[in-house]
Image (tube, rainbow, N blue to C red; front, top):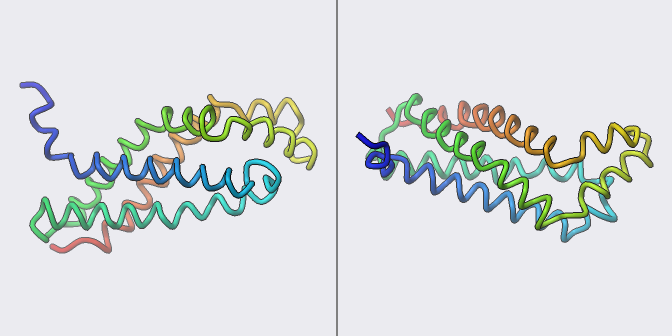
Length: 164
């Protein structure tokens, strides 16, 4: 039996994963617009972490949506965790495309600016900075980071959104 007839079971997870990716792209666009990828790049490392706030909110809303519209108002921790894990898996799957859009379309000057900043501030040699600030490295970091942080967020959010 083909896999696609059961895909309707995951439409809520797909919807929220796409919302998460869209939020990420908007967030990066805002970072660029306020200068965190250019003149204020020295502050990027601090302010970029605030993306955790809308990220957690999206997971909360996603699990509540799944509980209300799929599980009829009741959801165990396991069901919530599996829902979040599927969302995380989709986000990880889309992370190479997301990073490509970020680095090639939204903020193509980010890598050269970050390399220059890291070298000038003495945080890295030019060789190390160029090795770190390139698309392949960021695709790997985004995939691993999305997986780890997504599952950690899911583990906590599933606890608070459960209704056995």
